[in-house]
Length: 178
Image (cartoon, rainbow, N blue to C red; front, side):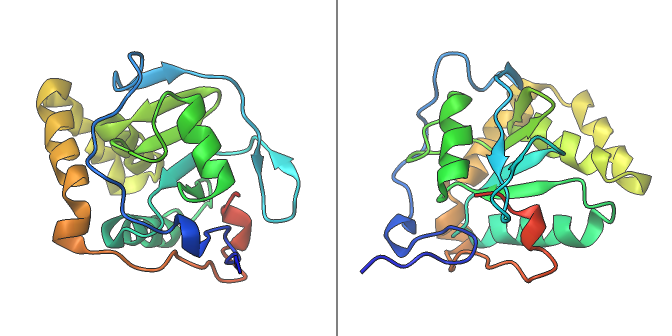
């Protein structure tokens, strides 16, 4: 019997991915052109509002990142899609990333997508205040930043472990798509 959690994660889809490294030729260059995908919100309506962070719903580090953003994104700009949900998988595929072998962090905003450290920097600077200092990370060349990020991403289960998908509270539910 297949059960779905409130955020769309299914037990059959909650599994560590194999080795990372599969990207389409156009992916992994920081900013990708994309189509304007509407994501399904918890109330069933299509929405294009605000940036969408696609995260690994069973990764302890990734869930910590989502909890950090829920706490510090006081304006509620960011929305979230676990890569184990249909919406998360659709966003990964439409931006050249393999949903069964994710190698990258994905941020989709305003018809564009950012990956890896460019995506992280964009999310952090969008929080405002002192978080804007994250823009200084662009002083480190991408060819140095991104391989370090991907090394961490490839080893995230081994270093941080896995957990059940984050089930949003009633107050958080509108910020999750899928």
